[in-house]
Figure 1 (cartoon, rainbow, N blue to C red):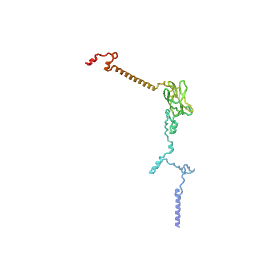
Figure 2: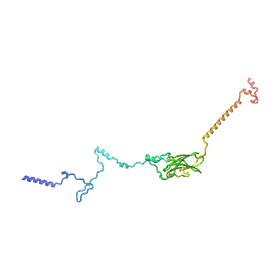
Figure 3: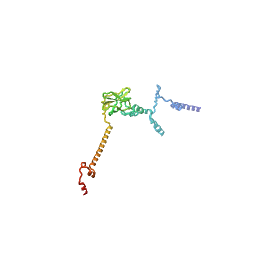
Figure 4: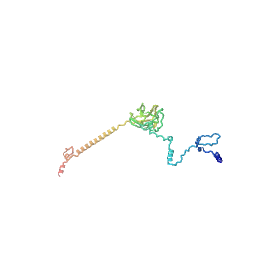
Length: 290
């Protein structure tokens, strides 16, 4: 009986100690972990539970503690975003190798399609071309050679027109847009002409002027008078030289023959008849014998 009372007293003391001790962690009794609070979780009204806000992960790279970590983070830090690469500024396209004054120049539109270069600005295809610019002219008695620069406009064809003062205008055959040189033949010598270069497209033709501007589309020229061909001049000089040579030879032979008659031999002088070669000297033989 006394042992039973002692055991009950110890049991009651143990229960009283458990009731007085603070409640342990749920994990100590094998309960599952509580579900993490959401980022925007708000506690119920009237609760004293503190608000827990989940921190966002830091963007700074963690400390590199091993060679594996170094290799990994090196790859991570130097990864290039394709979108960032596409947004980087690109160098400007180069200008096309196109010159307005170059003969047989390939159109700039074809150069741009081939290499993606930049062409100079031009006027609208729906407008007539601006005037070409005459650069140099070479004039002969029967023709003219011209060199011009293209206008900053779409051009399909060029024409060279020429008109003598007081006569009707004439035009050369059509030249394609790559031409910058042309020759006009069949002109008359010692005559004044107004020569113009005209550009054309579907919208119309470029205007002309009176030929007074320095680099305009037209120019007043004067063909030189007819000249004696160099062949005729050379033939005349050669004939004159031949006549001089023949005259010198004839004069030389005549002078030689005259000297031969005047300075003959001794026998000819002694036997010559009186009146033709002079009188004979009667004392010449006697002096010779002495």
